[in-house]
Image (cartoon, rainbow, N blue to C red; front, side):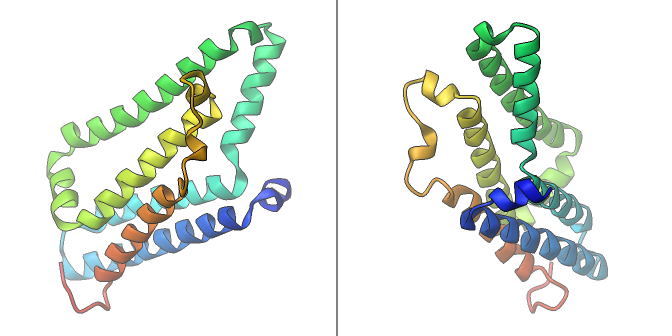
Length: 184
């Protein structure tokens, strides 16, 4: 853990702090939703859990460890000649997995999804921005962007997708806290 945490940049530590704040405020908003009987408690708890996991990933840099394990496996199994194809399949599988989770939420829990979008629009847009950031980062990790002829990480202020998404969730959570004037 120390190695990954020591490698974090100022931007990485800032992102970790934003994830932590957003997760804690989401759990606080869940408590407020329970007190106010608004029906949003489950949504806030799930959002807090997702944000806490993403923050932990930011701190521990788990995706890099997974990539290194995949490369070690590819070397051991003599698959490095197929590296670009494997990276493309991994990226497509990862992106498809995220889209399937979203589709599952919409189809399996339409009332909850509708409530989330109606009552927590800032948090919904924030989560969308974070998902977009994650998919773009995955494209960069797997060099899919370079295969397509450009580098997505070189987009100026690319990090604002993640930070902006977290900021929107934080604002929404503050508006929905048990101590705020505005009620669900």
